[in-house]
Amino acid sequence: MEDFIESIHEELIKYDNYLQNDLNEFNEKLNLTRKNLFNYIDRQIELLKKIKEEYKREFNYLDEENKKTCEINQNQFNKLCLSINRNDSNTTLVSKLL
Image (cartoon, rainbow, N blue to C red; front, top):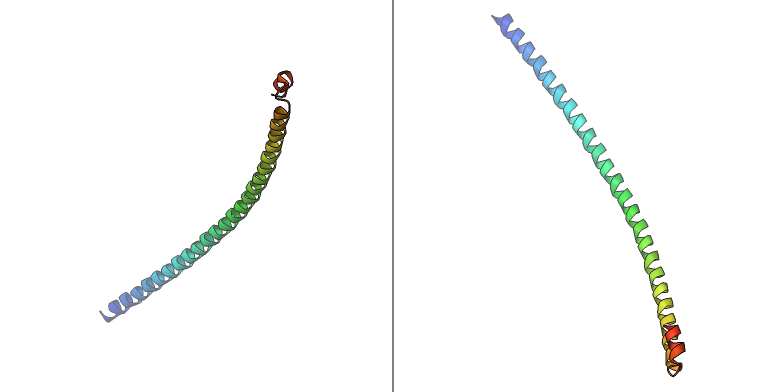
């Protein structure tokens, strides 16, 4: 009977070792997965920051170009108005200017 109990005890120790090994393996894989996922997320965040900066530069450029174009258009409109005002007695010329 004592041998039987000892045998069972040894088997239980083996199973305990298996369980510990499984737990350790699981924890290692979980930690590796966590690390890899967080690294991936960090890389994506950096990529998105770079993309955001590119779009900022592009929108700033477009904003500046739009301001220049608006200024040019306003100057041309002002010149047209001045020409019309100077020649308001000459309806033929005013019609051509419009």
